[in-house]
Amino acid sequence: MKVISKKLSQSNIQTLVVFASKDETAKKASAGKLTAPIQKLLDQANKEQTFSGDKKETLMFRNAGTEDVENILFVGLGASKKLTAENLRVAAAVAYHACKSNKTSSAGILVDSFARAIKDSATAVLAVTEGLLLAAYEYADLKTQSKDDKTKSGLDAIVLLGDLNASQQKALKRGEILAECQNFSRRLGDSPGNYMNPTILANETVKAAKGTGLKVTVWDKARIKKERFGGLLAVAAGSDQEPRFIIMEYKGAAASKKPICFVGKGVTFDSGGISIKPGPGMEEMKYDMCGAAAVIGTMLAIARLKLKVNVIGLVPSTENLPGPSATKPGDVFFARNGKSVEVFNTDAEGRLILSDALSYGSEKKPAMMVDAATLTGAIMIALGNTHTGVFTRDEKLTKRIQTAADASGELVWFMPLTDDHVADMKGTHADLCNISGSRLAGSATAAAFLEQFVDKDIPWAHFDIAGTAWNVHNRIPYAPRKGASGVMVRTFVELAENHG
Ligand code: BES
Ligand code: ZN
Ligand code: ZN
Image 1 (cartoon, rainbow, N blue to C red):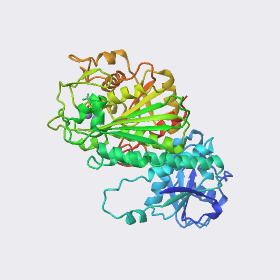
Image 2 (cartoon, rainbow, N blue to C red):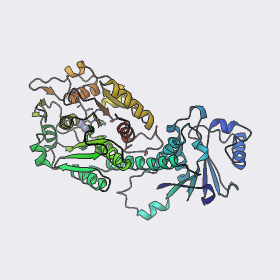
Image 3 (cartoon, rainbow, N blue to C red):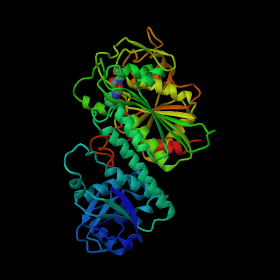
Image 4 (cartoon, protein in one colour):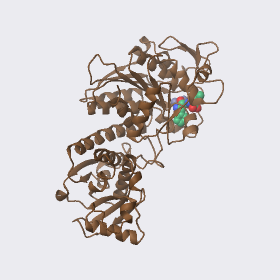
């Protein structure tokens, strides 16, 4: 589906979508912004108590007999004073789903009904565009129903109706890029393990990067060995599939400018290895590469938006399986930075592959380094699927991350990371152990382990997205009912853009 803009007079659509806040709906007289016939319908609905303008509320007038359209769909925004860009993103998704369930063949949204709703009308256009395109995402690649059938039941485009000024047009384009890259990230996550192994992930990245200005280099197993990525090799040992290390480079600023570095966990299936996971729910572990997907989506968006920054994206990718050569509990390996690690639990594998990637990232001396990983079940217990847990000891970076998350509408929560957590990760017969002696604060001890592979002078943050990377529809109407959410693409792009 596409989002396009047209002047109201040029429209030829079946359903006109009108966003209305609670106060507008409650007003008896016209608010002066909506045309008189639309306001009349709104007043009527208010009188009949069929629509009050509450968040996520919808009301469809069929054969509305006004504005040269067949139907008018009202979508509630809640109280106008409290309105945020995220509310608009949600309202746009609600509008999309209502159009679809009403079998609307063409729809347009009255820009006037939302652009004035928040201070910055370009941000409003951005949020609505994102909400529509994100809501329209569907992973149907492996369903045998023909592509034709699929498009017949859906909408090819939703039109933003109004005279868009230059900054609003720019916002539409930006929203389109961000949503497409987030949807790309979702597609990687939703693809099952047999259609998304490390080799396929690398190939898909190379393919998607074509023509964007993003340079992609892929290391095979031999190169990974040569580069002494002991952690990645230790995890890959149990699988027939070769590991891959994906390096994405984008140069948007002078070569003298330090890059920023994103690192993503790319475990394409996590069975737990020899410390095998219980059967029920194990299928969810195809999502264990959502950190990688977030980084790949972010890099594609940064390149397509032509941001004026230098950025490196790193993805260590492997399966975690209990094959005959698999790493065994108690085994010790040496990571890229020379530290020895004993593997007491082969299911704590994300931190092992990230150890090498973070060491390698540190060697590039980035101005900041950020990683994303579906790292621990413990973060789901702590934060559920609402907030991504963020671990950092850098105050400046904390502020930047909060600003970026506020702008993107994604929720983050800062978690503790202290020397006590680091002490928990000391090894018995090696420098480090991959699990802590106790089960307490499992997400913080995992973060403390990662910290051992980041140079002290590099501002670094770790994002544990295990709770927010999938099945978040109960909270986010623009996310799929089941499956990958594509979380952190928008926040990471903001972070890159506002860096320095
Ligand atoms: N990929 C999992 C974390 C995970 C669990 C993500 C559930 C999403 C849902 C990770 O590799 C893992 O298995 N972590 C272990 C660590 C433990 C062995 C210290 C965990 O969280 O149980
Ligand atoms: Zn695991
Ligand atoms: Zn894992």
